[in-house]
Image (cartoon, rainbow, N blue to C red; front, side, top):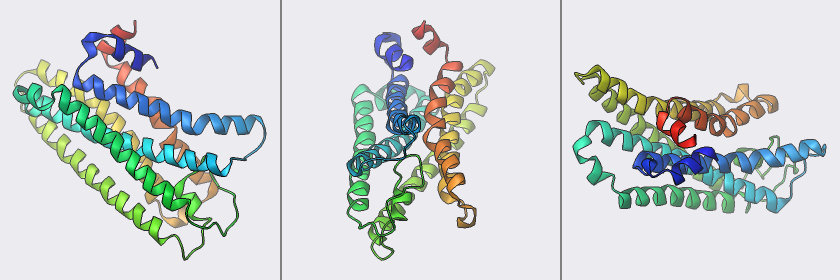
Length: 260
């Protein structure tokens, strides 16, 4: 909330980098608000219940925020690439209209993906009971409750999403290879320090997000258990959005000054 308020109110922070950081903060706030309050309320009331419609809304919000955050991190990597590798063209490439279009594409991608996943998941008949072994409604856990011969359509969507995930991952890796190549060629030590200070917070956020998601979804089936799935869900659904504002604010003097 402090990061969002600082960026919105301080005109010195009205730049592409902070515009995307504002969107990331909104996504992080949404991620925490979608999963944690309901879990806390159930814990206080000593229940595990959630309504069918509530579960559908939670799935929709979780997917839209998850996909939009990953897409936004990819766009932010492109912003860092242009700033460091093509600084003379930065103002032209990353103009206000271009930034708004990129942000709209990020939210639109998340919305469309969430709509497809939610519609497909909740069109499947549930033949294995109604107990979700997770602290929030998650698509893979819901698929375990569906009839074994009826979830191939949703599995197909998950495969397409996985392909998009790895496409963005390759783009991120290539962007940072070029960024670090350009930074290491800089003759000025001060210039290298400034470039690293711009990129390292974003790289830390990307690494935290991707590592927790990949570990949660790509672990061998032999390691799967309700307790481990719960811990991994906390790692990718709660830890990254909690730490992102801290990572960006601890080393960022402009954010600290704006908050003060």
